[in-house]
Image 1: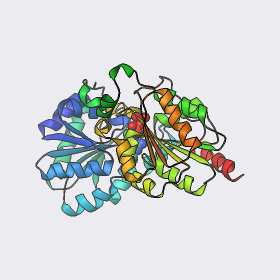
Image 2: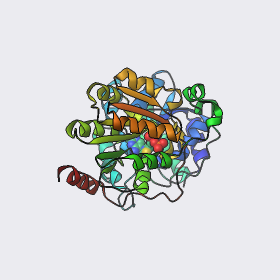
Image 3: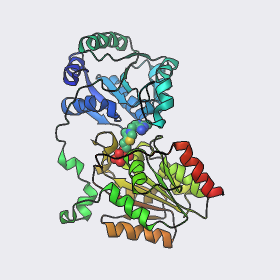
Image 4: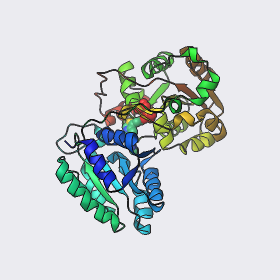
Length: 378
Ligand SMILES: Cc1ncc(C[n+]2csc(CCOP(=O)(O)OP(=O)(O)O)c2C)c(N)n1
């Protein structure tokens, strides 16, 4: 295992002190170091992170991008058509979820097999980051030489490479949602948990309701609240839940479709709100459970605290938009959509955190699809 701080300092000594990325639990400690000791920009998606790093590189900073290998796919466009043709280097760290021989989740299986091949296809030089600090320092020196010749270089990071680095307490003011503070007096705290919000949804659903849950804890918690053939746990493809919901709602007009999103996921593909606003049918309910964090990968702050999602949904053309706070308001808003269906967006602030022993769906993704389709098509 590498001492994260010692490695971070070796990076800093070489001038790498501008970081950007999207979290992965394998990289959590390096991200914490970057937030604690350097400049860190939490990007909405990995492609944006590459572009942010590239901009900072042009601006004279030696820049680092951090991402999960699932997000390397999001980064393909800038890596191939920005960094390549502009000869713009960035130093990348990509985790190796789904490594052969490692027990991991189904959504990482394919990317685990093709991560290094993808880098090679994109003509990005790479190396597995050593878990010995001296070797890692030497690798860094080589990487720095490649960066100096205007080519990107990526380290592929295996599980357990970095030692623990505790996140120093963040800026409390930036964590509180400005809109919440304006609209809701402080005594209305505490916030509902994700599990409580999902339990309410599950309790009020009717026989025709399909529940689609976003990547990370949301799907895992919904599975624990109650597994059902009418549920879909997205597991991967972060940010795609409302688009999947849109397609499903348009093709199954007699069903009610509830797409349950997280703020990190919604931000990752926020453009889909414009599409949903334009084409979204009345049988679609898009819910945002907003905890201002990438809770599932270690609780890193997202930028959602400064974003008025309800205003964005309204501006994108959602017919009905609700900003709720309490369990009662949340339930009422869902029931209202059930009774008077209109394309609806509900933003519900929730607390961070989940159960210690939160399980994962035992049912495989393709089985989830098969039983859902059997329910829909008989
Ligand atoms: C493209 C991609 N990048 C990164 C990840 C890793 N990842 C899984 S869940 C998650 C956080 C999701 O945050 P949010 O949507 O706010 O939900 P929360 O975890 O707070 O419930 C991340 C970053 C991923 N699965 N896919």
